[in-house]
Length: 349
Image 1: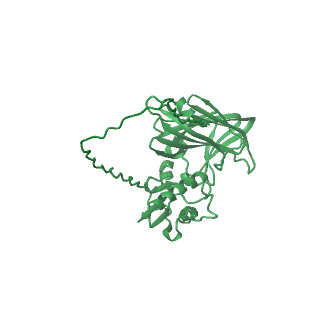
Image 2: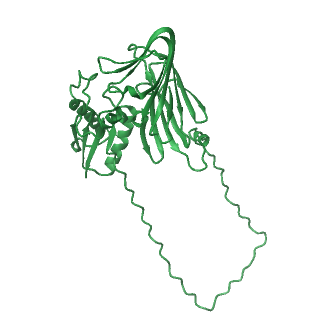
Image 3: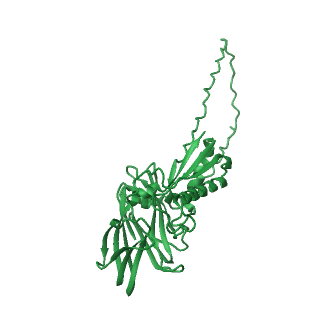
């Protein structure tokens, strides 16, 4: 997979390609609600796009040893956060779906970082967003490539920062390397030398009266009052939960840990956690969560349970499953549905 983001990260293009054994049938599965119009180029031309009975979209290739396609990517497909010139992105190279134990012989993910940005951090993750054991990285200019073998799936997490005037991406990349501690030279005390012949100094008492100078009081400098920023008002579901399951991701836990710190620093008395979904009824999770209301409440409760582990008082938390109520965007396309799948926090002091 190769990712080409636009300079402002408003959207981008995913280029997927696969090579395997000859004369076999291959396919790529998309989640329910995926808009097939986002696929802008496909080869070979004999491909088919169809809906499965589970509501998934399947892109199929018959009797071939390789395929390639370009997919339009919206911000919610890759953007984790964007604040103060720092952009965090999460990219998935897909995962093997042939069977529960299938693996991909070689998974290669390449990111073309836009001009004007440098890379602060980058990490290879598996399909469960856990660090890969043996990731291999190659960097050429502003292009970063991850290669990993014999895994079910692979992802790339990157933290990018807008370059300052005169700063280069290469210099930014050097910042992520360990910096050796600086050795401080020992400062020797000066040695006083006594003169061989004592010098006699005559002391003359002044006749005029010396007027003492009044002491000047030093101004009292008050420490500035540090006001903690308010906790986030909402998170998109993909920013907190692992893909395709109702479970917090490691990245989501990190966000909630920071959220809990800001909540306690701000001395808030209570928080209401509202879980939301899009308007598509549960399919894959229907056995556990029959309705969107039940599903949204389960996700909100999972957030609440984690906040309890971070020292937020149970009596301060209220949980509500709002289902597909109060959409913030259109449910007619995937971009809007992604925005509607969210967890909101209503704070009270």
